Amino acid sequence: MSLFLTLLTFGVFVGVSYLSGFMKKGIVPKAVPEGPFIGPLDIGDTQRSTPRTVVVLPTAADAAVRIEGYALPQSLYYHQGHAWVALQESGTAVIGVDDFAGKLIGKPTSVKLPRVGERCRQGAKGWIFSTKGRMLAMPFPLDGEVVAINERVLNNPEILTKEPYGNGWLAMVKPRELKRNLRNLLNGAIAMRWMEESAAELRSAFSGKLGAVYQDGGLPKEGLAECFDEADWERFADRVFMVERRG
Image 1 (cartoon, rainbow, N blue to C red):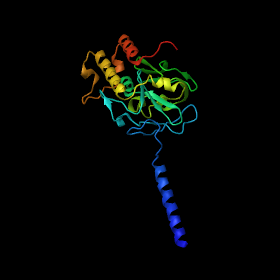
Image 2 (tube, helix red, strand yellow):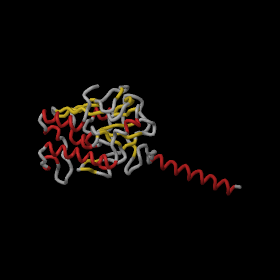
Image 3 (tube, rainbow, N blue to C red):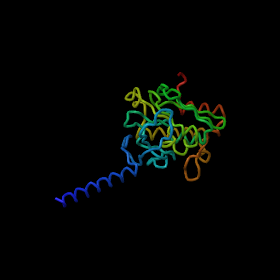
Image 4 (tube, rainbow, N blue to C red):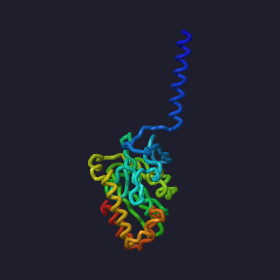
């Protein structure tokens, strides 16, 4: 009997230690479609109660796929206006801007995000970035209601360029027409082709001069928005970011 109790006690001790190890490592369930490099994200402060878990890619560098030098995580959905969507187990969706938009903006001087409680409509203006005399309005990728925003981006706008798929996320939305909205979003090979077309559009704006768009080593330069004159910038932004004028 004493031997049985000893073995039982040892088994409980091992089980608790094993579970504790997993908790210390911060392992959480994956909430977006399965893919490499997915992990937990520190979401910081929001205007509403902090969601328990936000799961997206920690950094653009972790993306397994790069198109024309731009990171394009395959586990996310993309709006053609260069916003991404990460579906959460809670039924909400985290949204942000992709690596193309982040690099084009460079170091924004200001960021204007939607308000918590605001109704959002797919394709309508969602947020505005300013950088050295250039403004960029970008579209909501989903219909729904904003339930949280990332105040870290307001306090440190540069994080948009450094971590567009991680700590540079913008808002959390409670979707309203998710199935219908997903039909208008891109993923996989179609998203890759779309990113190629966006990169080609940017090269064309600089008369195909690769040295004006890419650094040595092939990575895109940051902050090219400020290299446009005002009229050319407005035309380029209208074509590439596709914000509806109404609403």
